[in-house]
Image (cartoon, rainbow over all chains, first blue to last red):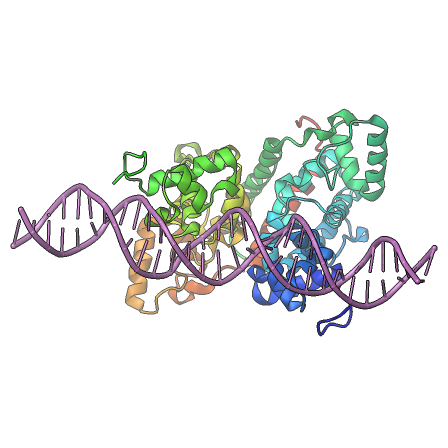
Length: 234
Length: 234
DNA sequence: TCAGAAGGTGTACGTCGTACACCTCAGCCG
DNA sequence: CGGCTGAGGTGTACGACGTACACCTTCTGA
């Protein structure tokens, strides 16, 4: 079965790790199906036994990194917990400079990514934030969560296919499953649609979210300016 | 010279406009050299007479959009001026959904893009912001300026090639030229490096900028939370 | 023993960006 | 008028890329 110099038979995790190493060493452009295959001493099509296509490969690479991010520590209070988590995410990004670009091109939310976002949202909720405020606040963090674009919260109820099921019983089962897996995200979503499951597919008011974050920043700028901010920096 | 059904001979602007229309109509993936050429009734290689390569084409498409953004109106005070400008930028993005992704992949700062950033920075300076604060504030706006990534301010002194000239006289001439073309950006840059031209290539302290923006947001969240923010939204 | 799954192979197709050599005129100069 | 030049358009070709499809091994469990 080896046939090549390899001993063990290769699997998804090894392939993903090799892809991350390849990107670290030679840049993301070196991560082609052919390039990765040859680094693994294998023919390109062999990869498709472990990864369904290139998008899936990239998703998997991102998941590999997400696993490295520290989760918020509820003992520290929401602000420190969130801050530390996001700075940990940033450290990961800085270690893998290709990641920023890859993350920005991802469209699917994988379970690992949703799990990370759920943990972060959970830190706000644990700090006593209302579900609504947590929702807006997560949007405001936007790319700083690390690169998850503002649409990250669109259709948060499904990870794989986009439309919720029509059958009410099936829908309720799905919500229950989501609630068990991603409790914070689900809580936020349900609060946003007022518990009315028929509004699940609606998505967010992006314009509102954008202005919410923008005004938060502008108000912050104003406060600094009026306080005569200048020194003690750098 | 027409040869095809075309009457006029084609030029850069027409090519760029056609590319934007094609992306609007069929998505950014339809914008290949071949696809654009065929929409223009021309052979793919003909495009290279007007555009130096595909990156240049995409840069040009972005420039076309940037030209549509309203410039800040100094009569309104910095806050309104900045707010209106950024919302105008957002309107442009929303009209051309492919633009967000394209902008994120651009690495060169074109004169048009620099001009837009200069105008925005100028609004802060006109509002009495110090150059330093303006610098950090522009970073904090980050992607909301519309998608220009945080590195947008790295090496702001050059648009085309990355390293400043070694010859002091030539360097001074360049700074003078920059100062005439992008007065606000240049002012910020010079303030950041304390007027020491030998530090021009240094780039920013990204970690500082990141934490600056993050803490601004976290402080804003805290204020809203403590004020019992909840209603009157949506 | 033997079926079938899991893993690896080889060939082939269509698409992409673009290098390079070429052709064809318009406008100009002598 | 003849010929030059250069802008604009053409045609062919190459080396990437992702991946469909058919095939061959080898291991496993009933």
